Image 1 (cartoon, helix red, strand yellow):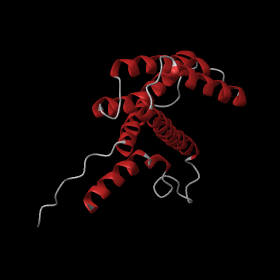
Image 2: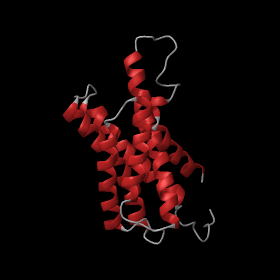
Image 3: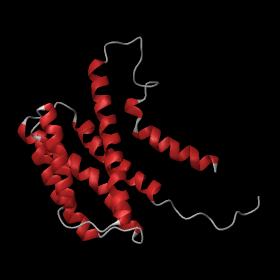
Image 4: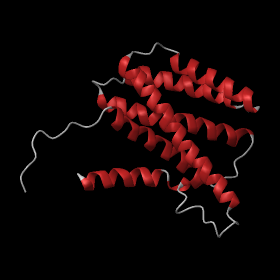
Length: 180
């Protein structure tokens, strides 16, 4: 059990390492301002991915979502965020991502009985959102992040979503412990 807990903690630590104050933000080094901003942005991507996936998985554990649900929810949320911060470009980004997620949802039909599809959907949701986000930024304004940081953020968002699915539907417990 401690080894399993350690491995799980290591995975979460690796996913959030860019925001870990013990390894990223040295109080003696003030020349890392840009790295700090990028680190916080990646941490925000991971945390937002986990939060969104938790909410979506909670809903699909209980209900079958009608077509257009994710487009509507993501777009309305983007409108409120876009208006508050004058970032209107996120509105079409989330509308497009929501439409793709609706299509994937109706293709995979994830439920608690279809665990593999449930976990795959959990990984795909943030991956789609951040892929559409980075592609849109790249095509409209350009990206100053390295390709590794941009693509890595998309991949890590998907991993974070996939890991959340294990909180929502934990693996089956072993029926018996074997004696040592």
